Amino acid sequence: MTQHFIVRRTSEADWQSVRALRLEMLADTPLAYGETVATALSRQEPEWRQRAARGDGPGTTAVAAIDTSTGRWIGTMGGFLGGLGSTGPLLVGVYVAPGSRGRSSGVADALLDAIEDWARVHGSTLSLHVHEDNARAIAFYERRGFTFTGVSAPYELAPSRLELEMQRVLPATPQGATARPA
Image (cartoon, rainbow, N blue to C red):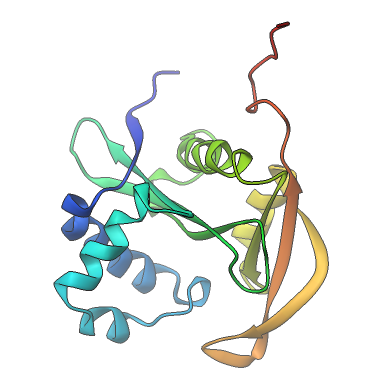
């Protein structure tokens, strides 16, 4: 199957696309993020530039999937070190546009592969926090080898609900790659 998108790190120059995709993801799946559309709309250009620059930041990364025929941003994921009580890599800001979801599109898998490549440099595990009601995301993470750690925390925007921690031990070589003898 021919891939109809590219995955690349974001840069400060991408701030307008980062902003547009963030607003889309907050509107599409509000329970998946610790921010509201109203809060995101109140942010000014310097903050969006800073967010976009995470693609090559120290201790952070952000990648985007971009449709090669239209230039439309169809997905994103990020990672950073030391967040939410963790000292290792943490997966954050996961989103795939509705028309690009599903295993057959390959977008979510390609984005996660890129984050795992980054995380492998910083640790042997990758952790994430997912809202307890986000069944679609949980199913994806389980398919990719993440398991629940038993740790949970109140969801920032609705403390009566929980975010559940999941973690995956990262293989020494990228998924689908084979190690070559030295």
